[in-house]
Length: 467
Image (cartoon, rainbow, N blue to C red; front, side, top):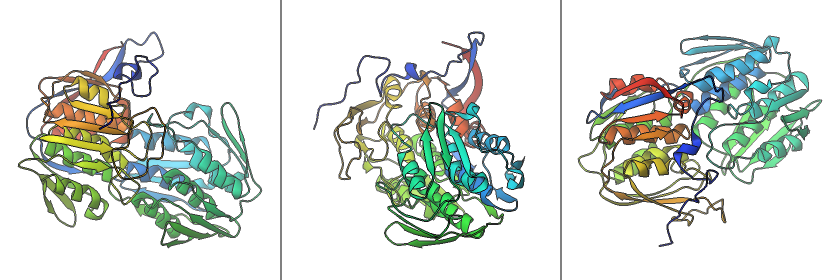
């Protein structure tokens, strides 16, 4: 086996320590920051109702910009990304009503072409608004995109596709400027089945002049759900084998209503919460077909399941180690990776996780090691799938030696999914764990504290002094 990866001793290393990712406020007058405190309570059991997918809801809100009448999205999760996107839409002139789990978007008053700079770096939604803004007002400005620090996610796939469709795009120090009298259909070949780039093409092609043929597209369930919503609005979209979409542009779309499918990332994560603590959690609201690869992987590790039309329940007497590779759909989802690595720490034997989708997805590992996990990181591909980032200095594989006796400590959440892995590890550890940087978790999970409390975990919000 190749030599284990050793992070450089510098605050700018790409894996680094958790301390460099602190969410301390920049305002020196702010002396406290939000935190979660977790005290393990033994096996987690009970029921969790998941809401609509984080990876779908914001894209449906953007799609609503294309309608000639209001659209209503149901089963909307209570997460930070929804509020961020709603505020973006309002800044453009759209009327948005958000009541409980329903959001209605009326784009008839959309007038501005510029997403304000205050949204710079908050998430990756602004880039998806370019096509709808070009159709609405003929020009667009979107600020620099953000999102989790999980490696390179360049916007060149988006820009290349929009350019082929006739958009004139200019990069500035603040973001992207775009102009087009009308987008035109084109043949677009994506170099990699990027979810975001596929969404950009779908959102741009539905009102373009002529036919767009998209090859090499993503086929994740959230992409299919978006395509079906656009079709419900009147778009002419055909899905072909071999990652091909054919979109014939139409003159106009109408609003539509859709109830979002359950979040498969949340569903898997809560199933793992039961397994990692020796308990049993039943997840409602996410159908089996969205969890096929997750279920089969956990089956291979010794998990047992009870599956109905509306719920999935998992438990295990003893978990076996496994070797897992992330991949695009229908492979093992990259967003399932960090909860699975946390679970590996409680399996007897040697497990391997090989990440092929994102370049810097193991930023959460050093804190797990601080908690007592025996994990080695490697820049060598420990799997069979071709690695996109050959030559990268950041790890693409980890080897986990279990079973580890985890202990609570203070950790800083680096991103949404890594943060959830910390909560899982804390639930299986000895002693108390304090997490800061928890805004990431609130941005991506629907009422996580309440769900964990329902399962029996002693977890609460607090504030701690800024480091």
